[in-house]
Amino acid sequence: MAGTDRLLTLRFLAEPADVNFGGKVHGGAVMKWIDLAGYACAAGWSGKYCITAYAGGIRFVKPIYVGNIVEVTAKVIYTGRSSMHLGIDVKAGDPKGSDRHLTTHCVLIMVAVDDEGKPTQVPEWVPTTAADIELRESAVRLMEMRKKIGAEMEAHVTL
Image (tube, helix red, strand yellow):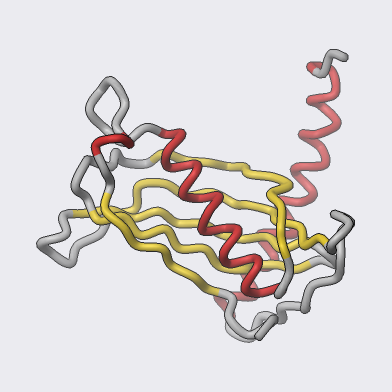
């Protein structure tokens, strides 16, 4: 049911096809996993088809190796009228143990769309804990920063 589950975790093993020339999982593979988890979380929250509008602040903290168990967790941290801001954490480790370390973190913005592809309203997420209030406030601060960065990036756009 839409508006009830704001957290989703995908778990799987990193495969040989995911490796780059350096023997570690390719950043592009990690970004794909982030997008998949983000879509599943946003679609679950909104009950609608969702598209990725923004991926930012991607930090590759530690490498992921073939055979690692990978956990990609997406969590709604802010909702607008049709958008959902998601905090994404990627953790990995040896599947024979329980230790997982943070490998990647970012923020995604997903937009719910109707059958014609137009943005459509999503259920509001209201934080209830101090930690969730801080996540929401952080998302709002990031929105303001993105506006400034977007204006600055206009100088780099060529048509």
